[in-house]
Length: 251
Image 1 (cartoon, helix red, strand yellow):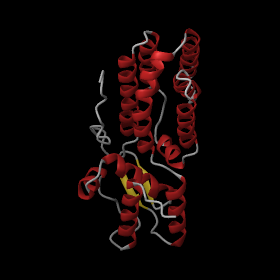
Image 2: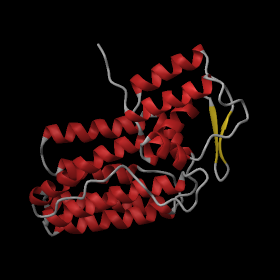
Image 3: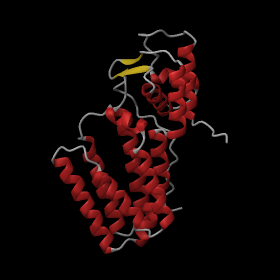
């Protein structure tokens, strides 16, 4: 059965072909992400995901603040590794975009369904998140629990299963792990906790419009933060993402 490649995989394979063609030699530095994105007509997030794919294949080395360097040229082993990445993984920013589209509407629905007990459990999840931050732990249990409790407030088994599967994909994703390995410290998670508090306030007020907007903005902030903290050579990067669809409020 034919399985279409994701866009980042297509770009990754184009870059692999360039390595194979002899255009670059071991030790060469690749052009900046922005240049590659403009040349191929795709977003910086897609190029970032393609770079992670090549990094997992051990073809390139990403040196923060310096750039991307060729450390190996493609061979049959890399071909097999590419097939594994194509069939088994998903781009981290693609995953975040899916979550943004789904969870913003789930939050709006949850605002109409949530109970006092559900709000209390969400507060406990945020307290777990806060304690983890105070301890300087790289632990996202409270974060995951908070998002799961929101979808569970809908009492819709299909939605609950979908969000469960998205979290599993994230946990089992080599690309997500590689992206996360480039990020030092946990201070950025304080702003995410503030986002969670805004979402909780909207849910407590049973305000679907505010809940949708707060969730949408939270996941937009997550995307921007991951791009900025994992950027390779451009600390002034403007946070260009997938072309975000503005959330429709009150429509």
